[in-house]
Length: 231
Length: 384
Image (tube, chains in turn brown, cyan):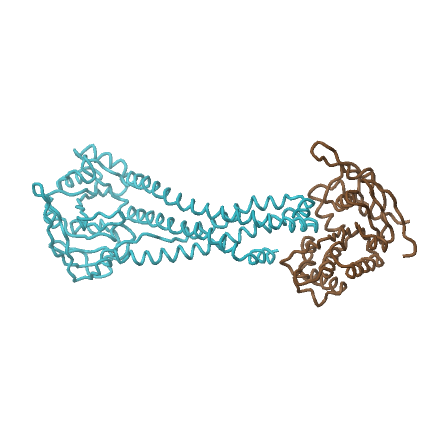
């Protein structure tokens, strides 16, 4: 059996709200295998987004560890974190978070600039990804000229630019209509079929229902971890 | 990354324009005030270098107030180590107005002392004064330009003489026999006439304003200066070094005033950059958070934000230099027709202004850039 691509061990996060401690995550542990397409669901405040931030090195846990590709990323120093984010993680956000002054192509290109990829290779990869996302004709358009679905596809292309070990998507369909939602979920599903590991945080049961594994969270803990059969 | 920096600057045209204008004003002030300071420094340097080998001898009671008899020149000349000594009589060309900047001066000098006084200064036309010349004059380049005079023209010179309680103004035409080339020294504003004519015209008897003592070769001017004071009564001397120090002291005050005004203006320009960059960083909080999530390092964000500030600094610097240079050029052209020049835009000043503008941009961008670079990506992404 292959080693898991992501391992979470006894992860806890406690915030102080004034003098009152808030336990956002309590002793969470699980593994994610390569190519898995899983969703984390749960009500607001259940700790889903906090959990995603810990894996994405956007925040540090109070206790516990996260391993990506065998590297304990929770021990990364501030200077190591950008490299790990570049090499191991791709983010897709609810609000797309594209840079409004840059075209679709440049938004995808930007992720590779920080990885010091040469200009020619950056362009080649960005065109390849945007073509894969069905945006070949739209790559020179700015975000304001693109529909919500198109923007989210640009964001997915950007997340994949540096060949990450895992794509972390935080409510990726939260801002789009149902038709676009279905198209985005299909797209992510197709990527996972090709071996890309994808972890989605969502409220939408229609989205989670189409993933291969559903982790349900409640009050900072894993309530259930279900493999969806036959998808 | 430069293309992104450039795009960020050009995306916000009005704001960038106002910031660049703020810096440009500061650098404009640096060029104008610095140009003035440079000109004064250059003029004093050139003037001193023309007479650096000579010791000045003044009457003991003051530079202009006392009378120094011409015979003192002979006494000075007798002091061992003095090769030559001669008196000069100095008076304002226009007795009614004593301008602060480069007023024209009539200098009475024995014609045979011209080579010693003016060293290798050449004439642009005509000839120098010769022994036996009467009401003849050789003009400095600025005076000739101011009054539009050439060799052969007549120039009216006025003298004011006190008679009992009233003063009477005399006027007399002098024939211009020569015009000197531009020297960049006080001599450009000089009207040189024979000493005996000057003494007569200004009713000064046998007196002179001061004496120049030329030391023998290999004689230390400082020592000789002290020896002259010991050997000749009722005089005081200024060695070239003392004179340089005194002029430098007064120049330092002038330079400090002009540079302070310029630096103040430039700092205000710098604050405008800081304000713009802080606003820009605040507006783009989410963008920086995103870049960090995409793997941008602190130095990438620093490079981007400080690059923007530095480019605005350079643009402001270039605009300020062009604007300041243009003003100085036209002012100099205008003032030259009035017989004076006030500014010198030297290569050194240009380099200082450009470096200053870049530093101003970079330093003003430092704090906003630091704030942007230190943002937690998590908080930045949540920022609304």
